Image (cartoon, rainbow, N blue to C red; front, side):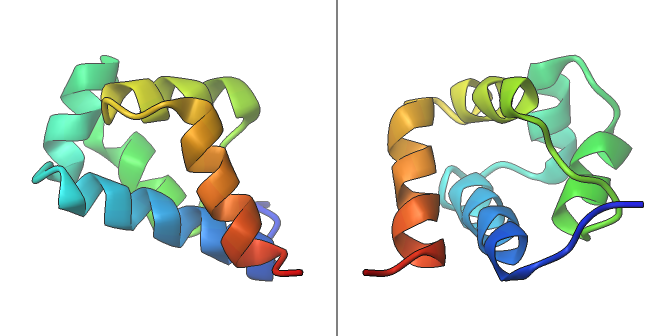
Length: 80
């Protein structure tokens, strides 16, 4: 069962917004990853959590620096 919490919600939202900002559908992103669309769908709808390695792979498939993307999540999920 996926763990849900405000920080996980932020992570999912950042991933969704990043995908959309790059003009990618779930299907297109999944194809870049060599995965099924359901992999992205389950992450985005909170049916599945994403691990750190998958996060790096998704960030790179989005043509984003994983550290910068994670910093965006941290800033939104854990404001000072």
